[in-house]
Length: 64
Image 1: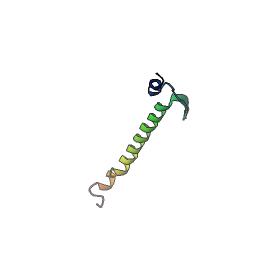
Image 2: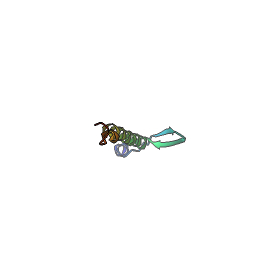
Image 3: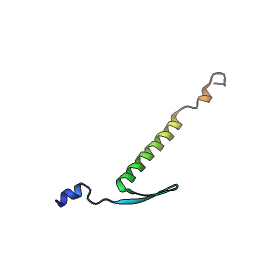
Image 4: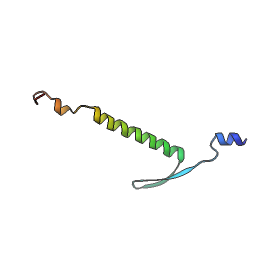
């Protein structure tokens, strides 16, 4: 039964998260998942802002 306990996460690790005005304890897996999701959203937003053409530069009658 010991091997089965290890496979099902019998040992839960918790980490302290201090972000802006919040101080909380989260399970390690949840903290890593939220960090990965946040980083993905940030990368998509920055990538979209860099790829999207500035529309005000391509308006007719502005020298282009």
